[in-house]
Amino acid sequence: QGDVDSDGRPDLLLAGRNQRTQIWLNHLTGPILQHRWHNLTPYLGGRLSSILAYPLDPNILLVGSPGGGVWRTGNGGQWWSQPLHYFPNGSVVHLEWDRVHANRLYALTTSGLYASIDLGDTWSPLTQSGAYPAPQMPLTHVSDPKPFAQLLFSFDQSAVLWAEPCDGLYYSLDGFNFTHTWPFPNGPANPDNCIQAIAADDATGYVYFSTMALDGNPPHLFRSACPWTPN
Image 1 (tube, one colour):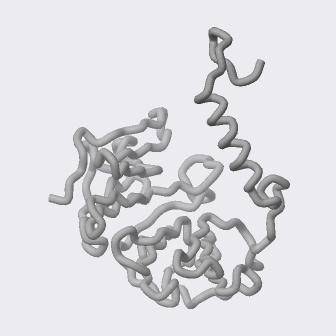
Image 2: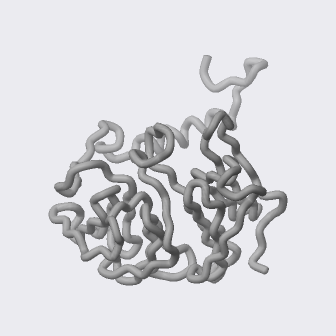
């Protein structure tokens, strides 16, 4: 029928959009269209739970593995090395750059939340408890939870949020000092305090978290009653 509207007249907006889409497709590189991928995997057992690119150098990548710690490459995956990790068990379930402090890296492990300012060579503990990798979760889960999020207030201020299942919510307004809070009464006895995933919306300031299905209680999705602010 061509680019026409419901009345059979030429739809110029649709035609323009289709033309732009075709131009975009024509400029896509071959590997994307043909699903070509390069294997960059470091030689280790188990699974990789997180992948992190370094914004200042495309050849630097970091990956995290539950039970395998942090691995890093400086040449696009040709060689990988494992920096000396400072985690009690080396089980890393999530890696993420700090959105305010340049070159600051977070690692969420089964024993706590850690930070590094030297691409993972050394780590400093921020807390003393952490997330569960999938095999250690109270119930069967197909992937690792990610109870971690950052809420950006401005270019130089953010909130860092994370949780251990059934231990409420932790948050920090400076990335260093954390406050522990229970979203609901009865502490760990309340399944709705068993946080599994956290998300934050910079545009609105709202914080979301999901909870686990536990002891007959279904999983829930919660949103903060009001937007978070830096004050």
